[in-house]
Image 1 (cartoon, protein in one colour):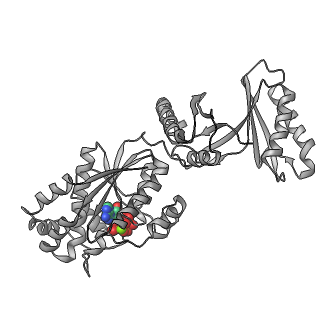
Image 2 (cartoon, helix red, strand yellow; image 1 turned 90 degrees about the vertical axis):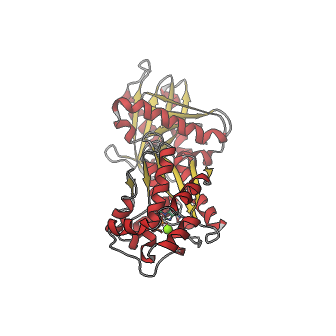
Image 3 (tube, helix red, strand yellow; image 1 turned 30 degrees about the vertical axis):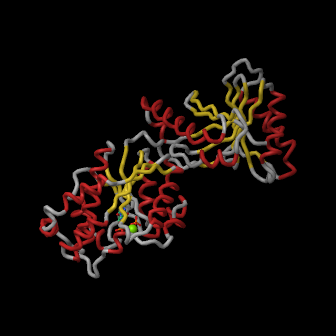
Length: 394
Ligand code: ATP
Ligand code: MG
């Protein structure tokens, strides 16, 4: 039987004290908007829990899949509802629930009853014992056993004017509901690292926007599509992502023509950061996010990262900073971006790249080189910002 009621478990929201209602309300909102295309759903909070009830036909698998990708949710429990519960009706429901829910009954269990309806004629512990023994009576021959200390399956029964029965928990991604921790602009390339970084910051409840720098005709339409696809995968967890696409070609050519080639990557990055910071200001975002990790390439030595940071005033967050490449790859496989990230399209940074890039730049040296761009670069920067395009990824 496909249940129509779901209990939503959340982890960290519970520790937010007085702020908790705000977090719960935002999570309810997220759930509503993700489920809306699938049917009519009622989402509400009650006694520090969130419930979702389907009030029309709906695609069960898709609804579960969507909910299990919403940040802030740690688990989803499909709930069997028993109307006008009596002790006998509950016994019958428990037996039937086990028959339908578990084809292999070779496990241990424990029943945990909560009684909010004090009129209910049987006390909590007696009801637990009754449900435990009726299940054993029916399924002991299948291998079912009771274990009150470390059961494989915990059967939860909550008795109110209706009774709720559940035992399965479908895991969610954890984290905090998006929209509870401000906004960030992520530098999203078509690589492996930046989608992971975007996902990690979104997981902490931050609303993400993304900026992608393309360099037509050196980078193709396919490269842009790849970035859009990556953003869409992340949006499955985070909700819609506003993507800013900035044409970087003229800027790169100006840098290429005027600056030492071994400093190209650093100087380009500094301009990417400046543009991202400007977008962050306009969009009222608090910070920028990148997929950099210490030592991965020459532009990611501590010296290079420091010089790149110095181009902007806003905070720069790099959640992959201490991760090995393999760890980033593992996470990208887990969240589902890996297969898209390895599609072979060119990136603007790999086209204008020096044979021997600097690994120990100093700020004075780089600022010296950038002086050569004075009077040339300003109108190009302005134009790039003016002509940027915006799409929503969802
Ligand atoms: P990724 O796998 O995320 O592409 P990477 O290992 O290729 O990273 P770099 O090319 O040095 O490393 O880029 C470092 C970071 O700079 C990226 O993680 C991303 O945040 C940002 N970045 C690089 N290229 C672009 C681009 N074309 N548009 C937007 N951001 C970019
Ligand atoms: Mg890259």
